[in-house]
Amino acid sequence: MKVTSLDLNLLVVLDAVLEEGSVTAAARRLDLSVPAVSRALGRLRTAFADPLLVRSRQGMKPTAYALALRPRVRALVEDAQSLLGPAEEDTAATLRRAFTVLAPEDLIACYGTDLLTRVRAEAPCVQLRFLGTGRVADEGAAVREGVADAAISVNAPKEPDLRVEGLAREPLVGVVRAGHPLTRGGGITAARFAAGEHVVVSRHGRLRTAIDRRLEAEGVGRVVAASVPDFTTALRLIATGDLVGIAPATLAASLAGKLQLATFPLPLEVKPLRVSLLWHPRRENDPAHRWLLTRIREAAGGQPLGGGAGG
Image (cartoon, rainbow, N blue to C red; front, top):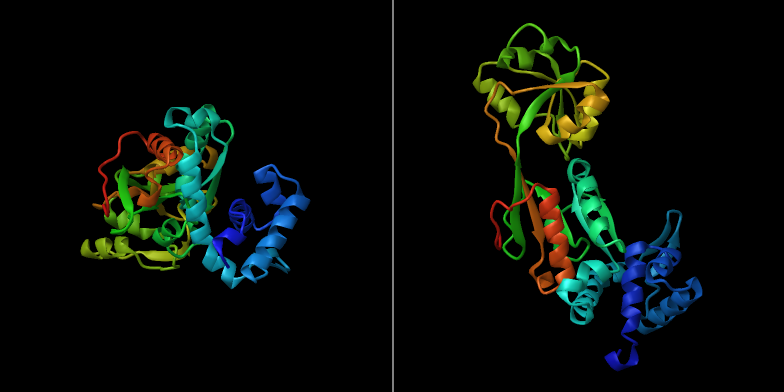
């Protein structure tokens, strides 16, 4: 297929259809009619000699070929938007765009409202798509392949080909329901902390964490009753029973009143969570993307802790 044989505007349609997984949703996003998007999809299918989207019980699903095309099409569309987009000083006021921010559900709960408020105040036509990390296997790959415009990550590894900037250090606290026996009877020692039944947080379902090693170094062990994939779920379980858990201080404080939780300093030395912002350097010439990163920094608490490629 020659480039001259394809209307490059169709790539914008292809990008929207693959991201939305729906002709109707893509039409709404592009402010086009459904028949217009259907015709464009037909032309794309002919041009690429592939159905691109096929029907399934869960709706329209991309073909393997379409999945391989997606990051390349996304990068081309982004480059075009950057080249033809408004000047930086006009970006927020005039921008019509949807950004995808990948983050653990707990961080969406912590930062999402503030970020959305800031974005809507400055750019009322911008949409945010929060994508939980449970939907992807590798945060770095999602940013690298264009699935997400940016990612907010906990304890992110070094990524030599990505920008990784520290956003915040989030201390961890102990959490129980209000009225739990741990809230009475004086100070909380490692032995008292370990004596209760615990819920731990692990995306991979692990029942043993670094906390167990630290407790064992103090000469005590604990009983882990359950493992859950995120802190928010853990806090909800804690609120309705006698489980003991650990959570980021900001998240625990935000839900303490609603869920009737009590927090306490951990009787162990535990490193705070390192919250980082990830993005791909190919987006750095896009004023709208730079604007988004600034709003994320502000929502996460202001000044970055340090940035640069890989850390």
